[in-house]
Image 1 (cartoon, one colour):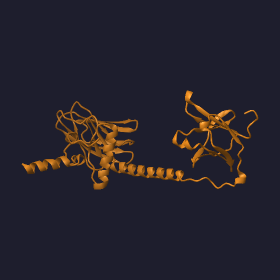
Image 2 (cartoon, rainbow, N blue to C red):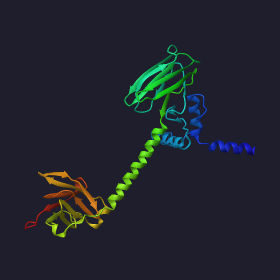
Image 3 (cartoon, helix red, strand yellow):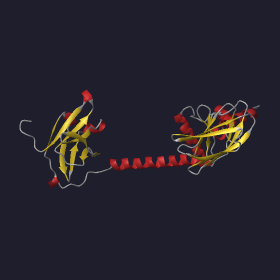
Image 4 (cartoon, rainbow, N blue to C red):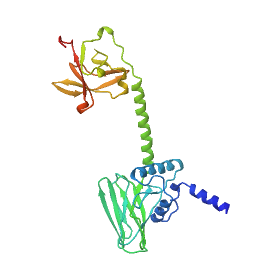
Length: 300
């Protein structure tokens, strides 16, 4: 009795991703996966997570498993097996190719007792199959324009069938994951470089401090000067802890968004201007600080 309990406990610990192997048809695959669900197959987002998990298993072991999707769908790993698709008379089973693929052609073994219709629905290629009677078997070969070949076995049952069969590519998903990590690393490195940027070496004799500011004092720059075709605005110390304002340069009476960088508490604007505005907030909460080039006029 104790030995049987241990065996049962071990069975519960087996990864559900591995439980789909050895099943005879898509109906048995789906039933097995429903009773031993892959974590996170209840919605599209978590189904994507399950695909990523299965692709990780494929990368680690060389073997990927089918996944139970939504509404009775079974997703097979492309290139890992020759799926047996459970169909039934008076019911149509949808076979979906990998996303983004198009059908170059298809061949049905038994065209008398089976029907197969190819459709292209936007980015998704599908084949609709239906048997004319129970207890018959045939094969279906689908060629995609990418060069992929889908070799399927169709099995007709009296009443049981799987409404939708799809595919995922563990190699593609793994490559996407690797690229995603690489892109994130690049973004982190760029952010680190930006965080450690320093102001350029500028000859003090070349600095032009002929600027004055109007608007709310709490958002006014502490210091403004220009050099080498750029304008430098030292912002209040607390600015980095709140929402930094956007910078607009006035051109022909219109506000034009301009490029700038935030470096060590300075806004570095990549152009000279006669007038610029710092805008923070919207509507009734909008705050505007105006920077004027030149000396302040008398009477301000």
